[in-house]
Length: 367
Ligand code: IPM
Ligand code: MG
Image 1 (cartoon, rainbow, N blue to C red):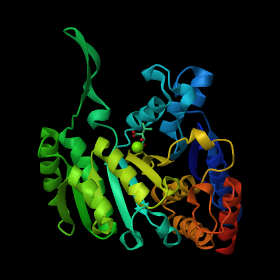
Image 2: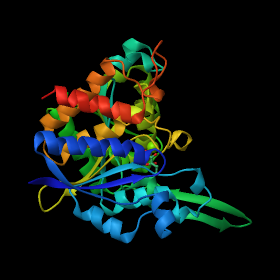
Image 3: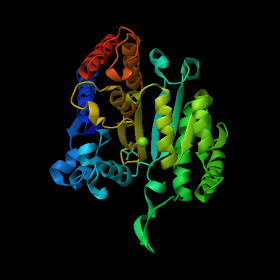
Image 4: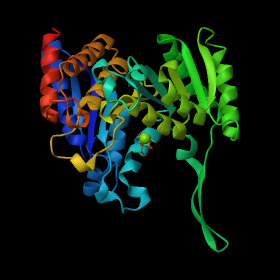
């Protein structure tokens, strides 16, 4: 029996090669755990543009709305840099987020013990780090109107609008409080209430929502101070909730704390569907890395642990997600490294598929 449906969108650059390793993991679950998924595959980003002239075809959008989970690789590449803004690869991803209404973007930053020395920060600052950034993903300056480049007098003006409604803040705040309840029960909300009205409203609504979660200790920080604290002593945080743009920036900071962008997964969740599962899209935090695409050098771990998040959040298979994450940890502890994780003396890098092999072997050993 099928556990549920998955739409795979490998995308561009290293997307297809890291996603190939995820497919092997999915097959492993069918063979060894009797958990089979109904998997289909389609195009997004530049790959979709090449075929359809748009970064996401309407039929693909419709499919994404129907499945239990979408797994996305990465989008973009230099080949598409000069395209009109409206058909750039990134627009495909933004359309998925917006039309599926995936308002809550979970970006965990965890430091694997075996990699603590890869961080640009001191090992003691980073060892054991386990924080979760909840980024609002469907509103704010990414989508606010008016936007555009307009003529004003004898020059042009570029305009984007930061805009948040009470209900948009309320729903993402609730998802962050719910997560905090399952973790260390500490939530830090970040905005710029000192200069932005949208930040004042953000702080007010988050404070109101906190009344429904008396067990969670809520704090507030200006986003710039938050960035500073993230690099000074990141372990002070448990869950962070913030808006779309600050979340974009802060999550890159948090990702790099752990040593490599190639390690971090994400989940973007919306409202529950009829079957009770949330609308969901899972993707690595890293981009399409066109400089190394097609060479078997990419690290598939972020894409694989994104699938682990799908097991946990879409399919209620938390124990299987733990199994997969533990397999990744074992492989790293054994010293396996893709090229992004070099620096340890005497270690030669393994290829993308070697890393996949090693994770599959660790999964076998877990049975
Ligand atoms: C991210 C990326 C995207 C964003 C880009 C690719 C549109 O940076 O997911 O963090 O800005 O949201
Ligand atoms: Mg980003």
